[in-house]
Every structure is written in structure tokens, then in C-alpha cells.
Length: 150
Image (cartoon, rainbow, N blue to C red; front, side, top):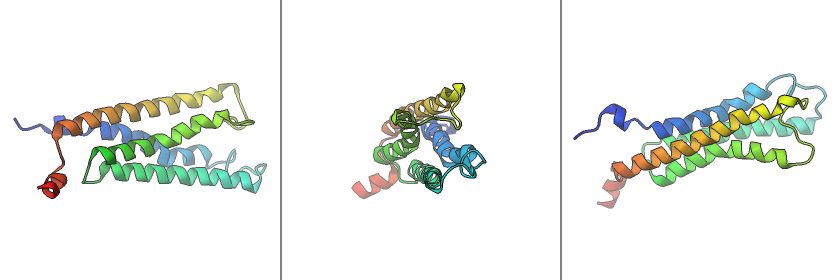
């Protein structure tokens, strides 16, 4: 029986795409302001690292979306898309392990609230990966792969 469009909709890829888009624009939403990149109290080298982080978010988001939505899909392209969607959040969590760091500037009691964005994003990537991996397995090899393999 042919699949309906609802059954064939890539829910997993869409779910992973949400954190990827968040990574792409999130640091600009959070850091393109007077408390970060335009903060006159920050030395140029601190601003350099802030700018580097914002650019890394764009790069990771674009790579993730490219691999998730390219026409030739496989378990490998799904894995690359999911890993790149998760990397920013993973490194964001690991930053708290370094001396003298804080997730908000100036440090506040509610700094832990950032976890309420990062942890659900990582959960969305994991759930999306598992859903899409199952969908890919059920669909069998992609048409382009079948043609190459005869």
C-alpha cells in the first residue's frame, strides 16, 4: 500500500532542524547586544571569541541543515546532520566546567535557565535522530543509492 504524505513526512529531520536553526540564529539573538559584542567593558580578545562563537553557530547550523535535507540521504548523512546540530549545545554545557565562566553576564541566580533551552534542544536532536533512522531503515535504500548499486 502506498504511503500517505503524513506517513512519509520526515518528522525526525524536522525535529533535528529546529535546534539546528536555533544554533544558526540563537547566538546572534543572545549576543548581538550591549551585554556582549557591543559591551565597552569587554576587551577586544573577548569580543573576538564571542564573534567566533556566533560564526561557529552559523557554520554548524548550515552544515547540519545541508546534510539533513540533501536529496541523497543515508544513515551517514543523518548522523552528520544530527551531530552538527548537537555540537553547539554540547560545547555550551561543557563551558561551565572551565574556571571563571558563567552562562550569563553579569552572573545571576537564574543563569541555570539556559539549561532549559540547551537540554531540550539536545533531546530533540536525539529523538529526531532515532525517528529518522527508523524511517530510513523502513524505506530501504534511497533511489540514488539503489541506482548506483544496480
